[in-house]
Amino acid sequence: MKSNKQRREEIMQLRLKRAARALEPHPRGEVVSPTMPHRRYVDKAFTCIDCGVQQVWTAKQQLWWYEIAKGNPYTAAVRCRPCRKLHAEQLKAMQSHPGANKLGEEVAWLKSLKSEPSDPAKINRLNAALDGRHDSVRKVAVDAIAQWQRPQDEPRLRALVDRPFRGYSNPLHEAAARALLPLLRHPHDEAWVLEQFAMNHNAARPFMEFARAMPDAALHRALMLEAENSDQRRLHNLCMMMEHIARPLPANVVYKLENSNERHLRAYSKRYKAEED
Ligand SMILES: [Zn+2]
Image (cartoon, rainbow, N blue to C red; front, top):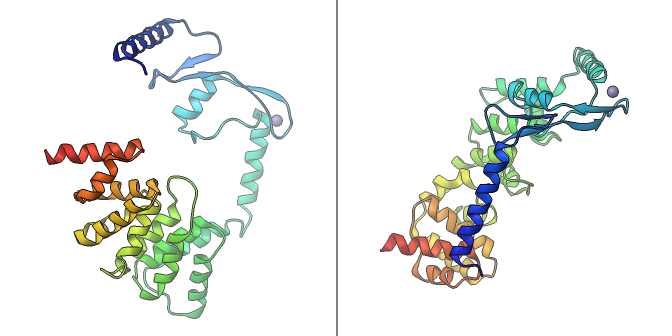
């Protein structure tokens, strides 16, 4: 353990180091962002993926790409200049080909659907889009059926919400959750909704209003059950939900949190204590 004095000393040393670094002149091949002074760009070597020639993506070019052209922050240069030009021409030629933009046409058609289709060909086309391979098209199809709030879509939407996904959020999952919301009923679907929060608090956000309308008894029952289990991540998720809907935790759950070996959970109990005082 470090004493507070030692820690303060360390922080001061770090600050001095950072200040010294800020005063250094910039070496060749380095540019500091005019809008974000803590960000700097450095010349980067790469090999063109088409012709294999060694290239340098200069700091200035990077600055232009990320800040002036507003390029995707997760991309970097992969082609040399001549290959990039050729690639762009080839793409353009491909897209001007009739029927090349099938997905785009499908999306435009789905977006134009204002009322429930009645003729079988259109119904088939919509179902194909909902079950298709492309999540971006499926999302637009889900947005279309969301307008009609048909009970028959409930199992399909539930299956989409239950589908696991990687990462922090997923547009198809979110669209399905939003479309499902008006079809859910109290108290019938309360356990299912709480399970969504316990599994992934962030992905369950569209159900926040539904949770808000739940009685304390149902919420407390779920929390107490979860406090008995050993999965602290799930309990943490439910506590975050309770905080979002501004509801107090039951006393015995607070006691469990106070004695938890997980830092986040102890922090929660402290916060609730502070509010009570
Ligand atoms: Zn090249």
